[in-house]
Image 1 (spheres, rainbow, N blue to C red):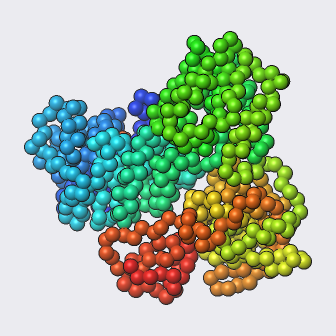
Image 2: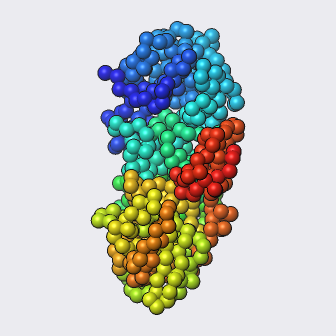
Length: 615
Ligand code: FEO
């Protein structure tokens, strides 16, 4: 029975899911399955964007037949010739004799390599910038070589502002009834799989992925339809900003990924001791036994974390087999811009450490930290100082003060110097109601009196955090610093806590005496207060709070509003196409229409009509 999903009035998802596949491409485990997306546009001409893998070909054919509703298929756009997206290509050629294949020269060569078919008369070749009008829609073809194969191209539909993005912005995981990323808690439940997909499938080609991002930025995109995973129709910035990170090989988080290969547990013991020392210093750590955790997960983690420790026993006078395979994988995926420490073990001729360094020296911008630690069979008491030294060296290489360790006691009482961190800047205002932690971005926190020590915060009534504070009478302020990445602003400022867990993925769950969480990274001070007065100012409430606890986390400068605009906030992309409307000068949101209502409030940044200007 057909199982299709409507995307717009004339666009239908006709793909299918596979939950039986053990290893995608024979190498990546997919315990949550995988989707093969295919999209049918039913304009004056009918257009199909790619097909599917052979494992789901039958369901796909049923879906397509139903979605065509007795019409013939006019065009098949071949964006990617890899067989997981082209297994039904020859079926369609046979079934729809008047169908034209729309592809580029490279795709045509691949079609002929995979299939012994005379198709030249059926092909319409496109190149960069070519367009195809199908009635109401105009398709713009954009070449995206090496994202992930050389023939890849993406397609922009200028009528509905949809980017059909081929492998880009895809993810492992079957769709499970949902089709849109906003139907699930993507950040919490799917971002790791999106990272694993990117790192392993496209990670080697960061430059090419960046080139595609640059090309795409010239288009006004409302929706992204990838060949795997969810369709993006809201909060596109959340996946776009991840792609900017990943394609530039910049770490997403400060912390140490420790990967070890241990035959009898002694190398593992050294790695564990180092992890404990690092945690004692408040540094985040993740650990992988490379003989147990699939390499694709470790490659994905490597794209996330800033520092690596590789610990390996010596084996056949070389690196232990599973560690060697991992390092080959990482170098093949072009990992770069990381700090690395090495531990080796060898009972008679330790050699793995030097060989690990040799391998990683071929990667760009790898900095080796501390002295290599050599273990002879098992770590001895006398060597604990070497573990300490390595932990010190790693800690010293972090740019900012490390995060508070998990569940570590935080200073009680009130440190008055926290007041010196307040400026007209950016703050995460957090609250807790029952089990729900939440927070939003605000820009006004002011000390009012010293005895008793009171502050005021102004918060828009539309924010869920506002309602939580009004109900519970407590709030925390995390004073953000200049190192704050846009991701943090986006997470706390661009989403609603009503349907998002904004603290998802934050490992540190430490709470202030008022029982609420705060940010431990990119934060120089934390202030916890109980509400004593509330003042109504129309769109905003001003809460006056008496401070119950206040402490410093780092000496990094507080971010000012001006610094944020100059250095953190991405510059708004103005759409190239001329259209009528107004753009928010604060966040770049575009309101389409001839007249902007006087009482209009920007749904993104909550500023009023006075902060909009005509396009
Ligand atoms: Fe899912 Fe590169 O193909």
